[in-house]
Image (cartoon, rainbow, N blue to C red; front, side, top):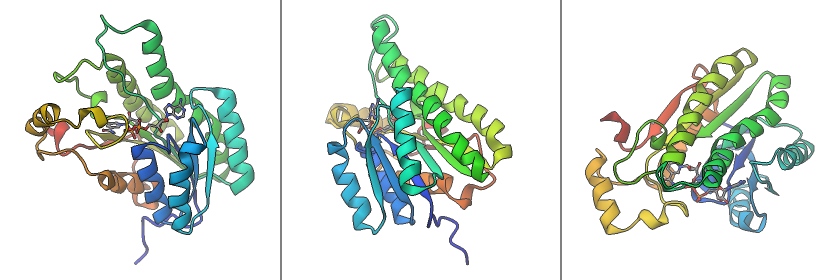
Length: 254
Ligand SMILES: NC(=O)c1ccc[n+]([C@@H]2O[C@H](COP(=O)([O-])OP(=O)(O)OC[C@H]3O[C@@H](n4cnc5c(N)ncnc54)[C@H](O)[C@@H]3O)[C@@H](O)[C@H]2O)c1
């Protein structure tokens, strides 16, 4: 039987690939045969992910790119197309968290969160869609969050909530209008996974509250996002677009 998750011969681009989830998903894509362009704010920080991809026998291209900056994105996408000659999968993973309520947040912080979490998806997608349209195929995967569909009593995350809510509905809009070009656009909505972003939350006081609220009673393990990413990146999801899959231990089910 055909392996629906097979990504042999495909080229994926993962933003924020130095971070916890970006590095994890880069390895998962390579594990199914994809070569991977790795984007982050520093090439040095991408070295571990690059080695992990290469140790799986796949090619990796680490690139410095601020995903909130259109000129840096244009240069990165040109380098990817020159190096690999194609581009099939975009994972818009880079993001920042920010605590604070509307009363507390400074305007500059609001703008920073919206630029990195939302504008980056607009700019990255805009840059790769022409290459995907040319081949009449493409997969765009956006990183949303349970914070895009839920508020939280545990902490005020108002800019982050707004940014991830925008990701969920941008995914729907792009999914609907890019479908005729063979391009699907879907999102993953994690709850709590270990990463640099969340390391401050892995303390007994917070984890106890999280585990009480989460039906599965625990945070996610790093590789528990692989299934959603591989589904959306591959032929397995050929008739699915505009969706957000919450990988959250049941958090958004209640
Ligand atoms: N970890 C979680 O529990 C969790 C839960 C829900 C959603 N998410 C989302 O998953 C994604 C990855 O988060 P993570 O937990 O791995 O965080 P992380 O902080 O470990 O990684 C984020 C990466 O994005 C990079 N980045 C930040 N700004 C950038 C920019 N302007 N240009 C390029 N790269 C940039 C960082 O350098 C970092 O390597 C984010 O979008 C986050 O909002 C994470």
